[in-house]
Length: 274
Image (cartoon, rainbow, N blue to C red):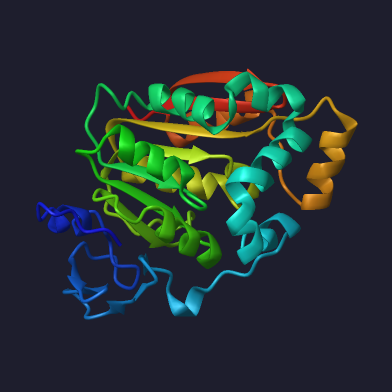
């Protein structure tokens, strides 16, 4: 966990909600954290804070979820795994249309209005932290919190954010975010929605932790026109979305102002919390 040299540590922990008792009275304790309300301690492990309750350790149920727990996949995720996976799932044109990670981040950053609004920001399902680092570099005066459920991904992310003074890393479940309500100006959720067991539960948590007017930007895979894309989805056990259904779903949760960009069989969308 990075600690900014100007002493902003308190602002980082003020975002947290204790996963044991739901109180927002979490303070730093050594490399980890402790809840003043219930006394529960939460360990710091290898550069990230583990807020996943020991009694609720997740079980990966699909091939894609199991791969995200792999140390090898975590190491090669940025350079090899994700670009290859996107080409298989979204078609060859999708990666070229964005220009890779740099172009994809440009779209996400502008959709989040990061240049015009202050943070803090949540990079949800951050993986090895490629978007986390880009967000932190883009807005060095704001906190950026990267969250993932995979230990392997967070261990790689912790090594790669070393030296960033405005990044915190958390292990937790996207279905039960360990943050106080109305904590974040924006939530970035790149390329993970298809892997969640309960997308509606994740949407509900995202809208809870956003401030009024906060923006949620996500990317996922639309229903494929390609036989190879459909086969890959079935083999990996991941979900593809009908985009009208996705839009209606987000609206039912309470989001407004839906916009989308279609890139091959992938989509980047933006919504706002009223």
